[in-house]
Amino acid sequence: MTIPTILIFDLLGVFVFALSGALAAARKDMDIFGYVVLALLPAIGGGTVRDLILNTSVFWIDQSIYVVVAAIAGVLVFFFSVRVGQRYNVLKWADALGLSLFCVMGASKAYAMTSDPVIAVTLGVVTAVVGGILRDVVCNEIPLILKREIYAIAAITGSTVYCIASALALPELWSLFIGGVCAFTVRALAIIYHWSLPTGR
Amino acid sequence: MTIPTILIFDLLGVFVFALSGALAAARKDMDIFGYVVLALLPAIGGGTVRDLILNTSVFWIDQSIYVVVAAIAGVLVFFFSVRVGQRYNVLKWADALGLSLFCVMGASKAYAMTSDPVIAVTLGVVTAVVGGILRDVVCNEIPLILKREIYAIAAITGSTVYCIASALALPELWSLFIGGVCAFTVRALAIIYHWSLPTGR
Amino acid sequence: MTIPTILIFDLLGVFVFALSGALAAARKDMDIFGYVVLALLPAIGGGTVRDLILNTSVFWIDQSIYVVVAAIAGVLVFFFSVRVGQRYNVLKWADALGLSLFCVMGASKAYAMTSDPVIAVTLGVVTAVVGGILRDVVCNEIPLILKREIYAIAAITGSTVYCIASALALPELWSLFIGGVCAFTVRALAIIYHWSLPTGR
Image (cartoon, rainbow over all chains, first blue to last red; front, side, top):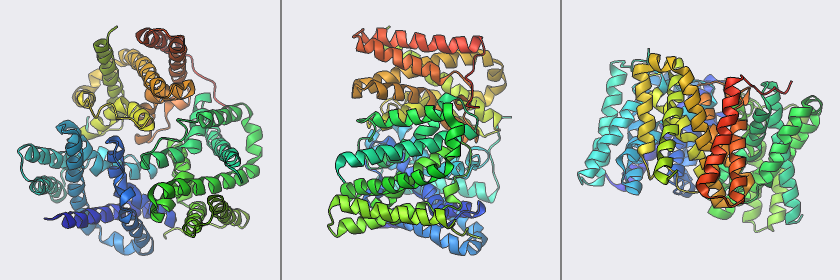
């Protein structure tokens, strides 16, 4: 896996997360601007918060392609939302791919900058889940991933495995790959077997 | 138009946006602190998020006059909300003025720092609309501008025209003025003719 | 009071605020990840926003102990929420302690960096109350402190007194102590006598 390959996967993750946001806009009966805003929130929200916390340059400021791709996803869903909605199962799996990529890439950036595995795992999870939380908050709903889904656990697993691999001095691309596969596996098992976490009561 | 003139317009925009927030606090039956917080969110929220994303000094840190003006608007509405509410039409037009100023000044700052028109338009819109979104989210409502209003479109128009004018090497004040007039015109037509965007369905 | 003493008090404040968040997660019937997220928001949210606005390093990036302590509070409440809930009165007083510490420490950091008392008071209040606002927004509720509680007023009092003491060139620890005691006194009186602010109507 080379760096351009990572960019392609990263943009794929952005696109898929943007679709999830725009579909939420469809459910709330928004206008086209609402679709674009709701597409942007999950697509670039998590990475933005991660970069702000790391006090580094926000990733999409130097590469506006991320904003363009997410906005296009929003516009596409506005005009073809019925068809996209029917592809719900495809979306769920693509979202699992995005989650896996986002958590290891977030953990990687944070680990490189702080060398602290607690921060790396925290910001890996932030990258993967904060965008979705922002989407749900703006839609006036309690974020689903805080209530039932095995989703954050997959991000925690992926980020943690990445950190262990990286601490063992594995090559960066191997660490990303192994962490990402672990995150995807946890999320895939949860989707296939309908796993959910118990609540506090 | 000179720089002090811009500061006066800018503070006027802050004051008007603060009134809109404090009136939302009145509808939610808040206490005086709630009025002040709800005044601050739309007045300085959009510019704050813009500056955080640009990784630059937040504009009101060096000029606390912005905070003071917004807080005063909150206190005024707390004591005179009935009368302010009756001026709803005046407010709507003042808000259109604020929107026009905020979008071109946000686009200007972002364009100067990144030279990327996509980022400039994005952050022009962020400056003009994110504060209002924060106000609505804290009030536990789905932001109206995501659902019907021709509001963000006005900000997109103004930011885009500013960027074109600036790319054509027009003097900065002319670019700001032309962009602002275009934003105001779109918003004004939408108010007068009750234009609204179609939703996705 | 020495610097290590401050760290202990600060961590106590974080722990208590984290408990308040996790108890909100319990009321919303969340899973264990939801408890941890809701614990983190009030515990480190206010200080994070303060540091972002000051354009300085976020405090917990260099000291992940804050994240660990808040996460532990979330996990503890998940397994023992019934018992923690019964200690509601103890919590209310511990929360008052956290509020008092957070507002003076936020004001202190902002005053040292900007020398502007308006910014210092603003960010003292931000440190003390924004985390709780984030907690309530994610729980899809209008923040209670914007509606009735004498809570922000305590933070404003503490931050203001700190600034006055600091401007009078009192030693830093004395200024922190006097400001914190004033904040605590206001909040304590409000708890004991059930004071609440009038709303706008």
